[in-house]
Length: 249
Image 1 (cartoon, helix red, strand yellow):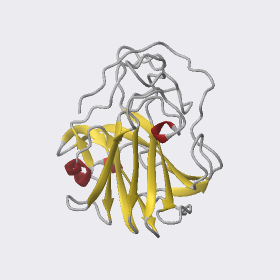
Image 2 (tube, helix red, strand yellow):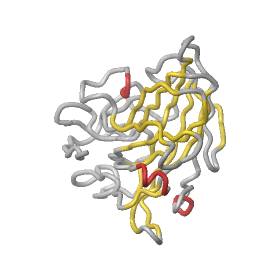
Image 3 (cartoon, rainbow, N blue to C red):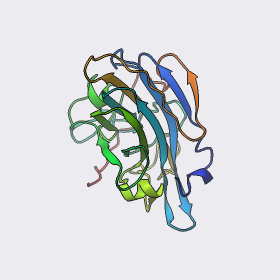
């Protein structure tokens, strides 16, 4: 399915965690996946970034929420985006990821895409609902709330912009991971060669509202039950004030 993702260092060292509650989310059962998107070079298609694939199944029609946490800049998260960098997962790195994902049914092909997810709802003051519920700093973190029928689904996750053709190819051609304007205050770098991310998926029965058990699977992924949130959140918004440009659609 993937053209070059298997060659990226430690790309599939991904942990799938099962969480009953996650910072501001409802009590719905949640499946949480952590992974990394890498800048790389494909021998055929040239420079670009990797794409990760995850599958899940629904035993009944459900309201599904897919919430992404990745961008570690612009702590104010709205307006002209003034704010600070925040090392959300405590890894000593800061990335300004602009994620996007596409959902397919049964197989990944040009004919099987169901829906896609990009930015969180509108540029408004952050709160504890919608795309902000997992601790997002900016609406650039992708988010989707949609109704899906019974069936098997595949999430193709990558960096913006991720076209359906690139998802089918398994490689994000020509993509450059968003870097900081100026120096990264932690690494001193002017660009990024990867970004870490977290995906939280919840599903409730479309008719009864009951929580549905979920299992996300992916190549080389193992399931480990871990209570609570996986990412580490600081109590203070430390760092330098940074300004940047919103990418154009």
